[in-house]
Length: 490
Image (cartoon, rainbow, N blue to C red):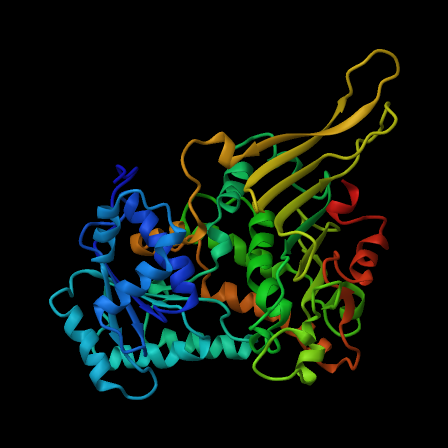
C-alpha cells in the first residue's frame, strides 16, 4: 500500500444506491480500489452496495471479483482481498415501502452514527426524491450525512427544480453533491492553475486577444442498447447542459478572490447568468442538430439494437449538436464560444481550444495565430501552438509547433481517473468541483429555449454519415465567419 500524500478523509460509510449497476462496476468500484491501493481510504471505511438483487455480502464480493478485478492492476492478491472485505450488500426496493430492506441497512449502520455517511445515487433521477424520503423515514440521515446525485439532473428546468426541492427537503444544500465527472479530470483542474497561477495569461485572457473558443466532446461510439434512453435525452441534455457548459464556465470565469469552494462556484454561476439567450428564430441560426446514419459496416442511429423499434422520438432526437454561444460581459463581449458534441465521430476527443487573434502586423509570410489546446481525453495534456522558423538557410519559412505538456509523460505519478478525485472530495466534504443548485438551474434556463424551439420545429435533425465530423451545418456555423473547427486546420 502506498503512503498517502495528505491527511486521510474521515472514516465513512459509502452507501451506493444502484451499487451493482454499470456505473458502480465500471467506475466507482475501480476508483475506490485505486484510492485504497494508494492509501487514501481510512482503514475502517466501508462500501455498502444497495440493489434489488437479493445478494449476500459474499455474493456481491464474488460479483466484483469476477467482473472488476481483471480490469485493475492488481499486483498483491492480499491487497485485493482486503479491499473486498470493505464491500457489503443490502437489498432494498426503493419506492415499494420495503421495510425489511431499509431495516437491514439500518442494522448495518447502527453503532456508526458518528461516522460520515455518504449516500451515492447511481440511479435514474426519478429515484432521487423517493430514495431521500425513504432514507429519512428509516431514520438514517444524520448531521454528518451527504448525498451525491449523478447526472442528468432532470430533463428541463421544471424537473430539475422538482428534484432539487425533493432532495433539499431532506438534505441541506451543503450536504448535496451534484457530480459531473468531467470536473474531476486533471486537465480541467489544471485549467484553473494555468489561468490563476501564471502571470502571463491573465492580461491576454479576454476579447482583445482571443478570437474564439471551441469546446468539443467527440465520441466514436454510438448508442447500441441505449437507444431507449437516448430517444428522450439527446446530445443537448446528455452532454451540453452539464459537461460542456461546465467547461465553458471554468474557461470564462473571472478570477475568484480566493481558492475557496464557494468563491469558485460563485464565479461559475455568473458566467451562466451572462450567457446570451438563444431563443425563437435565433435557434436555427446559432445551433445545429444532427443524427448519424449508416456508413459502411456501421449502422445508423435508427438501426441500433434496442428493445423497441424506432419511433417519432427516435427520428427527432439529436446525436450531434453544435452551438455558437456568447457571454455578455466586458471580458468576453464579441468572442464566440463554439460548443460541439457528437456520437459516431471519427475520433474520441474532448478538448478546449482557445484560438488567439493574429499578430497586429505580420512581417513574415505564412504565419498563423497562436492556439492553446487543453485536452481532456484520450491523453490529458496542454499544448500551446506557437510560430517558429524551420531550420535552414535562405528564405524564412514559418511553421506552427506545439509546446506540449503531457501529464502522463511529464509526471511520474499515475494520473488518477476523474471519479477517484471526486469520490475523495465527497469523503472529505469538499464541494468545489460539484454543482450548486443555482448553477444547475441557470444551465437549464439557457438550454430550455433551445429545446423548445427544436421541439416546435417540424424539421428532422440533419443526417451525417457515421465516422464523419458531423453534419454540414456544423461546418457552416463557423464558416460563415471565416472560422473552422480545430481538426480542419491541422
